[in-house]
Length: 392
Image (tube, rainbow, N blue to C red; front, side, top):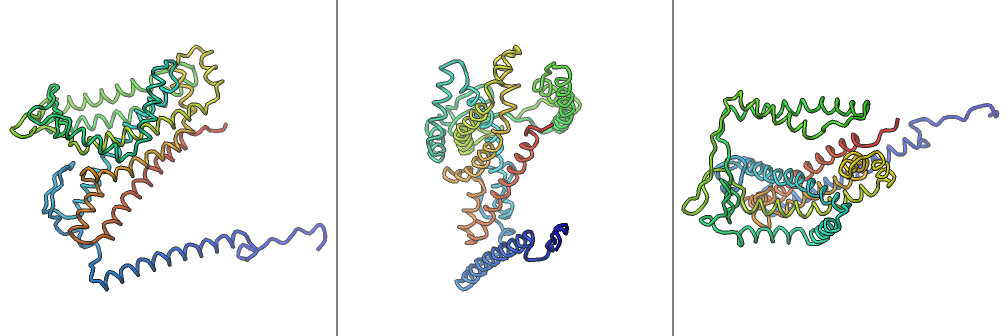
């Protein structure tokens, strides 16, 4: 081979090709994992057969035979296990979604409060973080459950604020009587959210072109509220409410949040907010100090400096660990079974006791948390890509 002759390229299907070897190694690894999973599954099913233990998911269509104390929609004991698991799933998602929203708001306020020039505010934020994040979340759930069921008064002596009642039975509140107006109001909210998107793009463009800051919160909020009120008015403007009243033994009618739900929500929110506060603090501290000095030189107030300069740049540091906290909150909701909240784990335990299908029920629970965690990760990864700094 002469010096001018280029070296021979190895074939893509040759063992000398690094890409080909890497593909073979991956295929062998996948095959080994599949073989191990098949062996474990086959061994488990064979042992269950030998011991006369039934298996399969056919029980999901059988009547559950038990009631569920809390549900977003009616459930009867004659309905199937499948519907019971759906009730448990809805209860789990309700706690997780509301908890994520409240923990994010509270954690952000606490994290920003750590940079306050007021020593008392800084001290209170620090004390909150150090106290709540160092107490196990299960103990916090038990504490709030004891407070809500033992400290609060009974239903006949419930604390009252207008049409709201707080007692050992939970929080009772008025709810609208369903009419066409509520449906139109929901359509109005959807329309308002659709209109917010072009407005925010326009406001961002105006800020980049002229430097004039336009409202990115209050105007969108008014747009959603206005569209909702317009839909409500077009639907006949119904005003009838189903108000709770004191009964002989309990608060009747209206809507209700049980003490179990409130205890789980309070415990998970306050616990996770402490960690989110530290995530926010670390993110803000990662922004160079010169950015804050530049904002002050431009005449921005302390609030504008944090909202327009520091937090947007800190997002690229905040979002990845924030995703972990969202996943932790969702998975920690499984501890609700300790205080009797009927989440998917509680429903699975009841189903196991009645049917003996432990492997199947545990598999369903694992699938639920795997799906919700992966969905949360995908959503946060998408948002992280949107918030990342783009190179020009």
